[in-house]
Image (cartoon, rainbow, N blue to C red; front, side):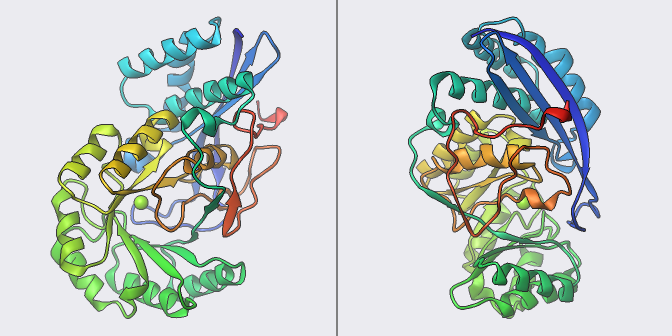
Amino acid sequence: MKITEADVVGRRIPLADDFPVSYEEHVDTEHLFVRLHTDEGAVGYGEGTSLPWFTGETLPGMVAAAEEWLLPTVVGEQLEDAVADFDERARQFPHNPGAKAAVELALLDLRGKRAGVPVRDLLGPTVRSEIPLVYPIPGVAPDRALELADEGIEAGFDRFKIKATGNVDNDIDRIDAVTGRLPDGATARVDPNTSWENTPKATRILERLANPDQLEYVEQPVSPDRPTDLRALWYDTGIPVFADEFVNGPADVTDLGEDGLAAGCHLKLAKTGSLSRMSAMAETANDYAMAATPVSAFGTSLEATAICHLAATVRKIPLACELDPGLIAADPTTAPLEIRPTISIPEGPGLGIDLAEDLF
Ligand SMILES: [Mg+2]
């Protein structure tokens, strides 16, 4: 199977609703879409999403990296040669995780289609038949957070994720409002995106919460350059602490595991630039008894489906994974994912989802 042609398009897509986080008000998201054609008529689809606060990547940068650096190693090659050449180029050409993720996903899609298997089979043995999901609550005012929590409860969710922004009184009010509403057995994880700065400050905030027993974990509450603060906070409060912002590659997971710094870590394509590498990182995390949380950060249904393939193969995940293509206002796939408290693992072949023809 020879790759004959590549189509590339960059799109800025508005969020469906306000989603303030600690970094900014956040009104839209940036996506790179790649479509690979072959001489056998198969088509491979890929998506990369920029997370500029994490990686510095931007939409024009993703498009240029794909067109000028990554796709020339792929077009005109037999599929297996293209995979090998792309892997080598991706190692030589640093950073640009969104651009790399889009090309790698399109190659994985083609590999799965050629073999007649779902992409999850290319990552490892399938260990679960359903994927539990969180219901996201952004860093909004407490009364709005409560409305959203009610919508999530009504839809049957019992796993929630609450964003914190670093405005401490508001954060506490928002977390208390949501956790106070949750039914028995339901939990929430809290993500301050580093805005609680350090262990002493984060400890004081957690001690003020009305319902700490309902917290599943706290995600990267402290500055990314204070990794040992994660462990200190975990041990001081007894609340599990996960790492996110500084977990970009395999070495970061090994460092966490070697030093026992966190109870788990968040894995995102927008940081790692490779679904295959995410799979290896999850394996490493699990080997150190850390849970790995598969996340699609503002991806469309294409990226979210890729994360579902990964989630199907990760041995130890926390109570739920994180993806919600409904956070963005437009989904360019032909069959957008329906988000429910648990969703079925995706079948293939390949990723098992197509981008709309008129996107390119
Ligand atoms: Mg996070």
